[in-house]
Length: 166
Image 1 (cartoon, rainbow, N blue to C red):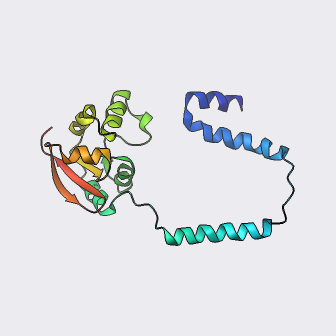
Image 2: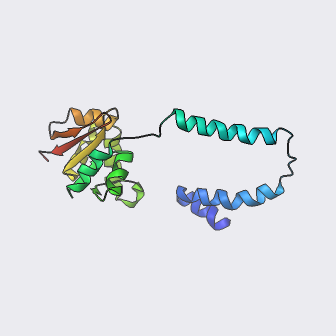
Image 3: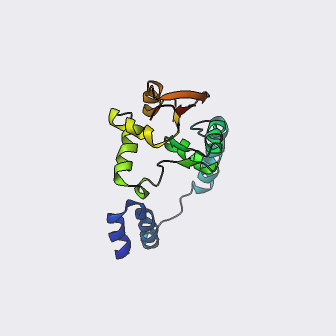
């Protein structure tokens, strides 16, 4: 536990493992009595989850068609968030994606500036041949006004651009 606590301070991703290790002794120390309403509560929660899943469709951050189109080119793609993960899943190559700490700190900062729609992040476009962004996101708004980008394809959620001028 001490090693996990020290590692958590150094790398935040290990905090999950620390929580699992500490949860067991904490749970064993609890003395809970089963409430009378428990048999009714469990089916009610399960029914709520099922109804919620049927009423609200799963989150879709963008078009799988556009991510496949970008991946199939074999060119480096600058994409935001979930779209970058979808490009990688389709076998494509992205400039920077999660886990972001696997990349150089200069590239991390540039990518984060670009994601936030800051002017300083515009240099990130020079590291890719294609740009894939959500329409409504900060990077999408800045990409729409960027003269270095030519629109290739789009759908209701995302836009795919080709970098025409570095």
